[in-house]
Length: 189
Image 1: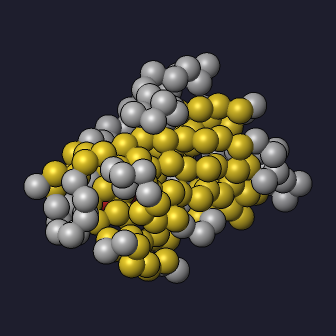
Image 2 (image 1 turned 180 degrees about the horizontal axis):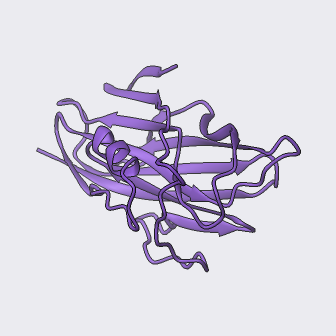
C-alpha cells in the first residue's frame, strides 16, 4: 500500500505501517493545552490543536527506530528528530496525534496530505490522502499515537541543498477539525 513517486529527482514514498500498540497503549507526556513551542522557518507551527484533536508533525531519520520506540511500554517515548539530512539520507515525516473523534462505530477517520517544498519554494512532492488513523478505535484520551502512514523523503545527489519545508494538512472527518502543520529540514552534503 505504498505510494511511490519520482518528484523532481527525489524518491519519495508514503509507507503504510501497521501500528502495534503495547498493552494498554503507550503513555506519553504531552502539553494538554496544545501550546505551540516550536515554529518552522515558514512561520507555521509543527504543533496545533482544534477542539479535542492535537497533532505534531515530526521528522525522524530512522522510521524503524520510531516504530520500535513507540512499541516499547514506557512513560515517555523518546524519538530522535532530524533537522539536517545529508545527500543519500532520509527524513520520515510522521504525525503524532491525540483526540480524534470517534464516529458512531467507535472508529476514527483522520487523514493527512503532505507537501514538501524545495529551498527555492517550488513543490518537491505532494501525497494523496494518507491515513493518520482510520477504521480503528480511538486511542485512549490523553495518549499520543503515531500516524499509521508516513512520508519518506530521500535526498538524492541531484537535489537542491538548503531548507526543505514539509507541511501536513490533517483532517478529522468525524469532528470536522483540521490542522495545518509544518516543519523543516536542511539538506546538506
